[in-house]
Amino acid sequence: MTYESVLETYQPVIGLETHVELGTVSKMFCGCSTQFGAEPNTHVCPVCLGLPGALPVANEKAIESTIRIGLALNCSIASWCRFARKNYFYPDMPKNFQTSQYDEPLCVEGYLDVVVGDHTVRVGIERVHLEEDTGKNTHVGVSGRIHGADHSLVDYNRAGIPLVEIVTKPVEGTGALAPETARAYVAELRDILRTLEVSDVRMEQGSLRCDVNTSLNRPGAPWGTRTETKNVNSLRSVERAVRSEILRQADILDAGGRIKQETRHFSEQSGDTRPGRSKEEATDYRYFPEPDLVPMAPDVDWVESLRTGLPELPAARRVRLRDVLGVSVEDMIHMTNAGVVDAVGATVDAGAPVGEARNWWLGYLAQRANEQEIGAAELPITPAQVARVIALVADGSLSVALARQVVDGVLETGADVDAVIAERGLQVVSDAGALEQAADDAIAANPDVAGKVRGGKVAAVGALVGAVMKATRGQADAAAVKDILLAKLDAS
Ligand code: ADP
Ligand code: MG
Ligand code: ZN
View 1 (cartoon, protein in one colour):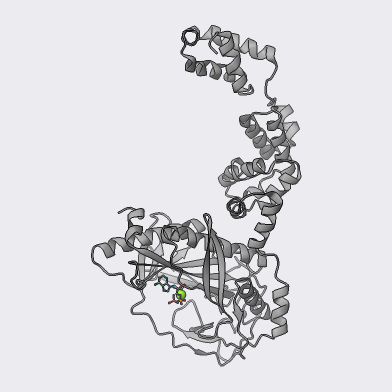
View 2 (view 1 turned 30 degrees about the vertical axis):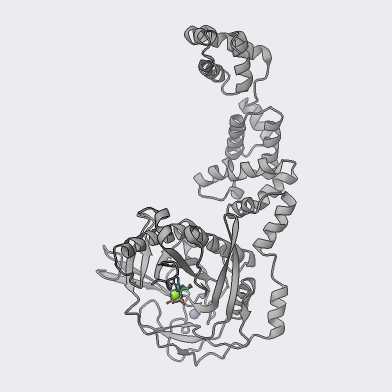
């Protein structure tokens, strides 16, 4: 069954749960450092180890960051709410419960507008709440899982790092664009969190983690049973996970089967999801209000000052830059996702036309950056240098192929554009005498081809153009060479 045919029969509903590790200096309920990569179990204390008698104190900065996230997502901020204990027994939490929020989250009822293709989808935000991260278990053995492990290692450095969970309402009506919508939502959310400077939002390091819920229903029928795909740690995987889950569920439904409510895991390698734990026999977490922490009652004036102190958010920044740069919203999103909005803007400021600036930063430069797994903006080339290359292409001093070689030279040596051109002799050969000579040589060396062109097979001239380009090391203007050859062969 193809993806398109599935969408003729079923409607997908998606929902996203995103966890963000806050970039606070200390943990949520104690003074331990949150720094990543330290020697295991060195950032621990009686509070985050859950030793008897230790009492937690809430991190004000974490509460502030959560409220700012809520405000940026158009949420209402609770005037009074509490932490709750989520009880479970597993060695990643030495307290045997996670301090979280249950029926009294800090922020509720918001939304985020997400641009998908040429339309905007309003994604409802159910809640934004504050909790603490768990420790990290390493299961040593062939399986890498707890089952069949020889032994397991626990590192509590991460236990107690403030974690914000952002839960969307179910998103329906996106049809075939459900996978793109999920991806665009996470990308926009990530951009907002980065702009708020509340987290380093590195999906590959786990400071931004995403669970993707997917279900299918027939038109008019109630929503189907959802599955929850865990471990989705790149934007591309968010999109792939939704798509593969839509296909998998459609196969089951078509065969008259029913979808099991379960958590599944996405595999980067195979591009599909595998079953995890079944939710139908889900543990009862026996939530109850945390007795060791006072309720939170954020002062109204404080919340208002946080609201007025919010930075310009990505959507507004895009509109402003779009007006300044005069590019489409879609281009703006491409440029934002590639992290090159500022670079494009600076290239335009340095005198380049916006279309050219965009093409270089999203095209060849993005490609070079990709090879090194960095962002294009991190390449060792300045917007002014890119603008200079663009100007030299525009006045005919460089062909596009040569311009790429010049850019390569700048990236390799750090030298300036004109220095690279001079050192490597990369300017276009426009010296008419030299081109005439190269054309005569090519005709003399390829009499058969020349004969065909003379006889009317004009297309054969390509081989001669190639010969001239080779002789001039790609530095001639191919169109001019073609004209010269055709004139010489009386075939134009
Ligand atoms: P849980 O902790 O059990 O995963 P949450 O309330 O934290 O429950 O998150 C449930 C997520 O699943 C929400 O994002 C919600 O929008 C989404 N969801 C609920 N029902 C459906 C459905 N039928 N199809 C797709 N997503 C759904
Ligand atoms: Mg959940
Ligand atoms: Zn601690």
